[in-house]
Image (cartoon, rainbow, N blue to C red; front, top):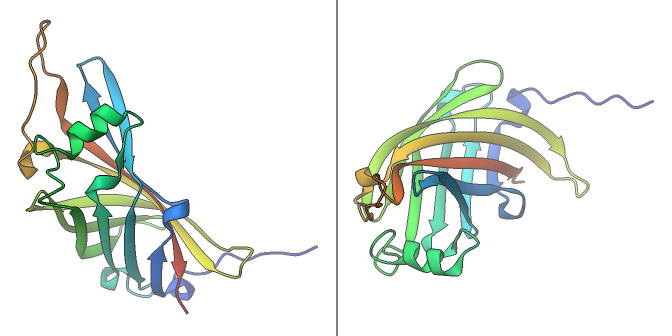
Length: 187
């Protein structure tokens, strides 16, 4: 019988690259006041430095290609890429650069940083749950984190909307960003 021992945080210290094939950067918005629309960005890259001895010294940087937005509806995706929303021709990338990190408990970490959308930068704070670490079949050390944060799209200059006959608006101001991250330790 083989026993596996989970690595300590200290053993996880190092440089990591996000694995886009096993990660998801998504979002949720309320639509027509009655349902939610979910989507994701399919083209992104990111790096992280994890410091298991002093998590406050950990850093993260992520770049998302705005054109990769995918809500499973081509017409809606085209509208989201337009000047009404992401203005991707002028602002082709969405970025996040961490400015602070803190460990809240054994499995919860808080990451604060600057999110830039449409050329507007705002600070956000995301709570992440550490989902674990493992060596994959190819010998790569992987770590997993999941987190989410609610933002106001108006804070980023995204104000387009349409009034509904029954009252309310077509698209909510509140957008929930969702992160399901698998990162691979670099040699």
